[in-house]
Length: 147
Image (cartoon, rainbow, N blue to C red; front, side, top):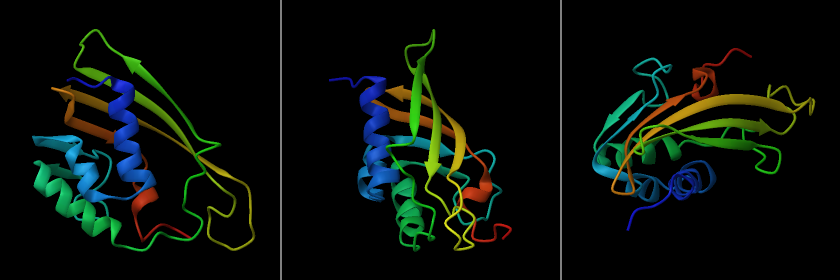
C-alpha cells in the first residue's frame, strides 16, 4: 500500500524532528535511499550525504545522541509547511517555515522568535523515500555557529 505525500512527510517529521528516533527515520527510506543536505559542508556536525537505510540509521543515531542546544527546539504550533505536488507523481516538495521560540541566539535574554525557512525535495518509491534533498542553512546544525 502506497502512502500519500502528506503521510510520508508527517512520518518523516515525526521520526526526525519531533522524536529524534533514528530507527523510525531510517524506516521511512527505501533500502537504497539517499539523504542529502547539499548546503552542509562535508565533515560537519550534520551529515551532508548518506546512502542506504543503514547508513542513514547509524549517522542520524549519532547526530541525535548529541544534546539539543538550548533555545533550538522548534515550536510546532508557530511553525508551518506547504506540500507541493509536481508533474512527476514520485516527486513532491515541502516548503517549511520553522519557528524557534525566543532566545534562538542563545544569549539568555529570551529575545524574539527566530523563523527559519527551508525546502525539502522528496523522491518516493513504493511509499518510501528514495531520495531526499534537504536545503537549509548549515548554521542550524553546526556547533561552531557564530555567537
